[in-house]
Length: 594
Image 1: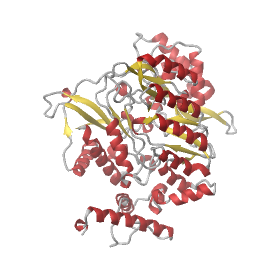
Image 2: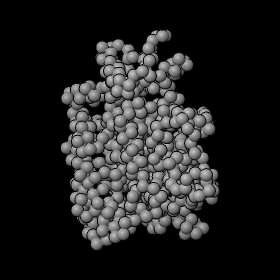
Image 3: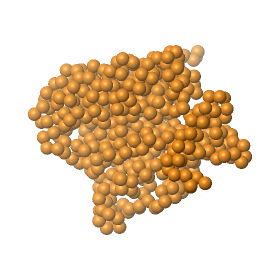
Image 4: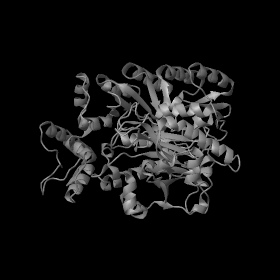
């Protein structure tokens, strides 16, 4: 009978059922569709696709994990009044609400800190100067007086007391931004080329497709409550790598030559299954779509994942594990069935070579595609920037540039549209606020997650260790080629340690027989990204944090001294040496071998 309803009637019924769900939960009753008796009505409404997937899991003898139970008991978007009450009463959440409030971008980070962190959504990482200054106001009034630029070209506001949680959520909305769905089992901030629209070498400007996908997510509740988090990135072929190969879906702009049997021009190559914390990169599927079809294709992929992802084991609930179980052919067939058409395949010989990357283009002054204009990439100390610095840069952007603040996955930002005649003035103002447009090769490629100072999962102080490593190496070595050092605190791998030339992941290191431990790290080596994408190999375990600066210095010095040519990358150097050789260069004790 549902076919007899008009679209307006269907939307009314969906809203009615959603409200009824909330009312039943408030009265302590089971939600509609939850543990339904045989013959009961089938779930309807925007949450039905998730409830049905849970029901299939239960019917097959599976046991829903806690997070699935929490979503099933009460959808987070139906619980906002309780969040407001908790804020009014200055209360932090219990575990189930800690999970729910992540749907609003709020993370209770105890025991690392007795506070919330708020993560925003900024499509393609680009926001306006007034929004950037507004975020500084929110962070200063309700948080710790700073923000962190993340590896998803996003902003985090930290050290938020419970009474200000809703003030932050609502404050960013008043700026024309949002934090909705930026945490928990949802599609995370969409990334795109940070130099989109200003890069003379780019194939495609990713800003419009990123915004389209962003608003598609915001306006479709059925895309919230996935089996696990989900990442999507758009690479336009510009100078600055977007790391789309680390995402669940990576759209890569390519130019298709004549003779391919399809219209020549820009197409998007589809790559799937990236999750570096599980040691996998997104792989090309052989399928392509036009840029204007990206949202439709991504939506179909998401819905196949929603229906078939694991809702019992959180460790196996990512898209990678559906692909591993099914294979790409079966998965793409399911996507095509949902689309109602076959995805285009294009032979490799008809794909034009991709423009070269510049691993340093996110730092310093660079000429734009527009004659007479430039972008300037600023070095932020492992992604952190104070509110005063944010306001100073917002003023600079309004007065000297095009008014855009462009965040990058390299934990920094770009100012664009600066006329040639005003570059020196912009450089001076950047320096005056305590930042710099210059950086050593070590600091250009230095990435660190929040670490144990602000994340309950982290085993070590990542940002502090990163700064000490950079200071130590810069005082002793001159590195003349790009190198990436990624330092992450836990298995979630927010700093993507597996793709660093040198990757460190937090570990507790025993120092006596009584169980006393200190900060430390496991070491991986030889990772890469973009045109040199690779997962690093484990080399050593449980290295004390205090020993890491000397270890990194020794590895980099060996590379400088023993490389075959000045052009040999650290990755290539690591690849042609054995693990024992590299441990010897780094003076790693044999007992620490991975």
